[in-house]
Length: 139
Image (cartoon, rainbow, N blue to C red):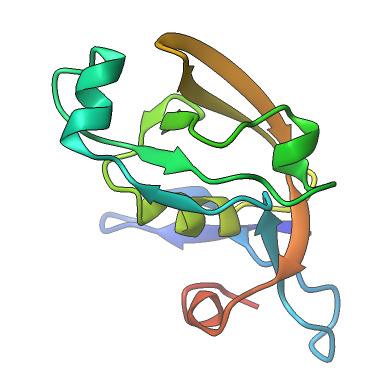
């Protein structure tokens, strides 16, 4: 469930801000977006092989069978450089960014495969949030 909070700024202006809290009931576990693929750090050599001027992003491992990543056609060795148009500065940001999204969200990934840029559309699944995600969410 996506909620909105109203934040009052200095001077009395109020803005609306989306909160990401997806548990339906306090007794139910908080759920996070899930793609079903692990990532590895982008190396300078791999980035160079793709024609990138500097290494950023992440390299996909083999997706879990039946996962949203596998269903979207992600392959081992694909390199992701952006999520929804936002560059992925570090490979460590991938899991955090995906887990902060709601299940059933459509995500567009800028990826490279065989030296060619492609956009992959993934509909996220759901997973129980890791403990560290509980601290960064409002329930």
